[in-house]
Length: 122
Image (cartoon, rainbow, N blue to C red; front, side):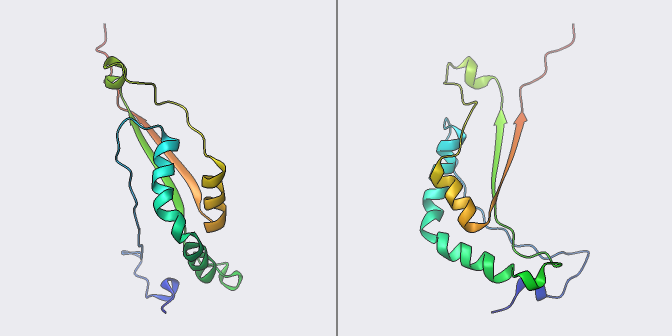
């Protein structure tokens, strides 16, 4: 097996590999979306944790290794409220989600964007 940190590095083309698991069901709270994504990943928790440990050994602390991240990106606008849909603000991680993040050494990154059109100046 090739250690990805040992591949020849070209500073203009850094090595990066991203795996993406997505939930595109509209109208869900973030915690519901996270639960759906993690239900697909949870059967592979041990393998993900093993890979993280294998490529992030203490002997290579000065070199960046593998990074696991649960990234949440939400876009808000006022269209949902105008249609009378339920409020999607507010969410929490359950114990299973926290246990998965801890077991795999992953961190949580949340980005939220307000896409509400700005009102014209009076």
